[in-house]
Length: 220
Image (cartoon, rainbow, N blue to C red; front, side, top):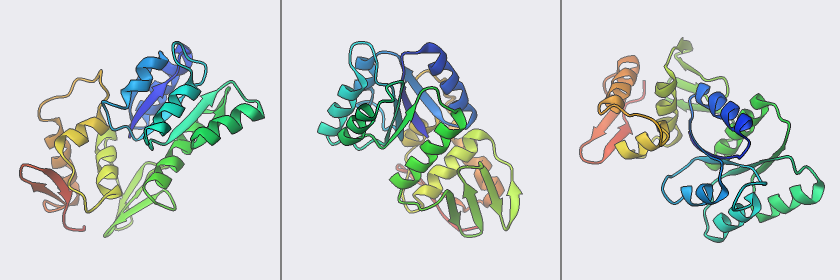
């Protein structure tokens, strides 16, 4: 997932960025409300984690702006404003979930997974394609019941394909999901990950649609 994090507390921001990256997510972190507000105009993020008390633009105003422009990005509000009126206001404006500070990182990651499942219309945390199964919570993949070991980026790419098995996904879309703005991307990195998945699940598992991108092919 490509996650937008808008949080001005540097300890929380650094800790969350590290934790989310360990779970295989690309993270773009902003400490300034105005910068975070306009970030959605440049990147197709999967989720946003939004603090409320931010410099230059308050988190509630950011959320109201997004919703007024029909930006349906799933948003989890993360804030020390735990009073009931604040929670109700945030949810009424368009937040999808709310977590107060202090918080448990594993709970936050579980809530993000739940938001993403709802966004893609999945009832649980499992995806299946033929005899291949992926669990987004446990970060496990099995083929014919046998555990398959994947690197972090390989898992994220596989989850991306299995979430939309009929779609053609461009190289640019893949790079957007796998890498944040401050990441260095090797010119052949995507091909390397595609090759790794084909090696594990069959040469025809991922089809190349010339000039367009990649698409799931034969079920393993």
